[in-house]
Length: 308
Image 1 (cartoon, one colour):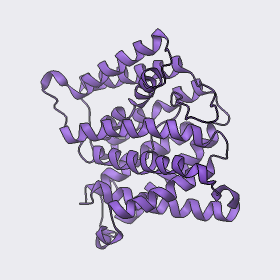
Image 2 (tube, rainbow, N blue to C red; image 1 turned 90 degrees about the vertical axis):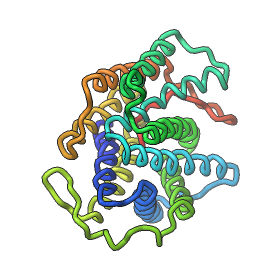
Image 3 (spheres, rainbow, N blue to C red; image 1 turned 180 degrees about the vertical axis):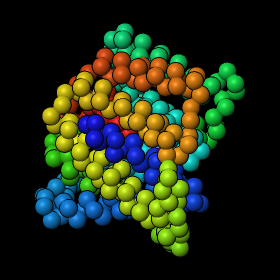
């Protein structure tokens, strides 16, 4: 789970460096998803072909998973990264456990323990500190909205993904969701809009100047394929309480790496807010537990892993 969090956290660093050369968030998202889908389909098609078989009743679930858990979360997150420091973008996305808890309470009508509400209050307080609301929301408004939208999509990813893997090998839904996301990205960003002529251009990544294409490949293989597969494998061996704690290192490592490699820093108030937000998210996760998934309507568990 630690390795998966490191892989997930690297995606914002790679994407931010690529977008600094003139790429847009939709262009980076499209190439990331296309490459990841290609790798996953080839691997599953060769070694686990049965995972690609889908019953007719599963198509709506997989379509929602592709829309929210693959396209929506990555597109919104990269849009946030293009306008905000990587660490703040990830902190905003980590409001997803709070959103899932609110869905469980007000949509399903399930009573939550007092600790869940305490965690929600802490997370919202941390968000206010990160956004520095007392100074008129100093964060870029579009970036802030994109980060919050990423949290909504992340909540949908967990709600739909938990149900999808309850009856089948996780590799199948991940691969099919990524393939569906690749098709959707053809509509959002057709291939001819990708600036292929800049693939060989040099980027600034810490003290190195790798070409754009190398960071895109790393983004697809390390920040997407490896992150998803390693994380899914870890969840088969760890209880959710342990996975929750380990997953919280993702925004911490990402913020530290962004400071070291990209020169992005946070104010003291934002650092304190980040700690408070993560503490609140952790309390919500531990208080919510992980309900057993029942057949039929979608179950709404509190999420137990990091971002996409």
